[in-house]
Length: 402
Picture 1 (cartoon, helix red, strand yellow):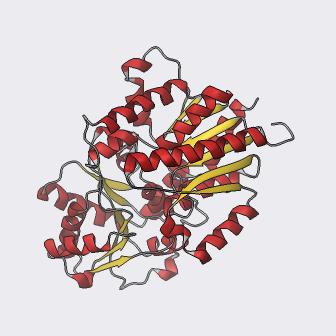
Picture 2 (picture 1 turned 180 degrees about the vertical axis):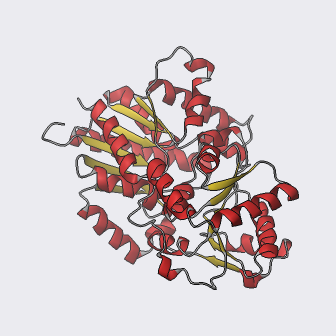
């Protein structure tokens, strides 16, 4: 690397003030900023930005890290017009940053920012990293947000093709996602540079609780972290928890969730889950790890679909880093290979009562195995280390340095 740091413009449509921005953008960039001059463009939601105390703390943290942050306002409705407006503003700001600072690398996180990355590459000749984060257009169909024959889906898939063909480097969250893309007809004879970098976790935060803090009469806490709607399947989670209550009558379901508490309460009532056995919390990113350390096992189910081949749930690395085995389902990125192959979790192959009963029993047995905590941590370090993720991104930047 040359003495002067290479300059990178990182563009994220997720706001830095969102939990995902905290865990999957800022954690990486703070470490990358030690060797590269990072310019960050994000789109912040009004509700997040209005939290003055949190905003000022974050601005100071970003500034101390040496990252030069340009936060823009995110607009949601009407969907296509709002996104088009955000892209127009984003393009103007991106052009200004690139030209003023002679930036040569555009790192676009997911599809909407990649529109800007593609345009900048075409008109200015900058390098373009398509950090895809999954098959976004197909995810929206699978989540019931779009129809497969809609103009929005067709437009997004048109852009996806051009992102893949034009990108200097394509970052996938899973090996399964790379295999799926290699089968795309239009890529069969097209040389591509793929890198697999799963959603990593900062193990300075996500580490196991001490043995002294475990306690002999502690209830068995089953943990759920994140969204419960869209392509996430929450009803089977509650079905599994009811099975767990038969095995461990004092079990507790701890749900860390933001903005969906009313829906969660509705599903608890529908499944006749006793509210005394459920704790639903909203916590800041800085508090998530401490709450996870109170759990004995993690659980999450994602709608099996083509789009999830390229997925890697952020919570997986965080659970394992805390020494917590997980129960999940098939056809979600490399999750089955990791949980089953490394004996750090249980995979549910079908959503039916006999299979769920067997899976929950296996999860309880695994969670009470004295060796499972160390095994989870070792697997987490091997697959989901933030250090390793930063090393791989550095290698990509280095390969593109002029």
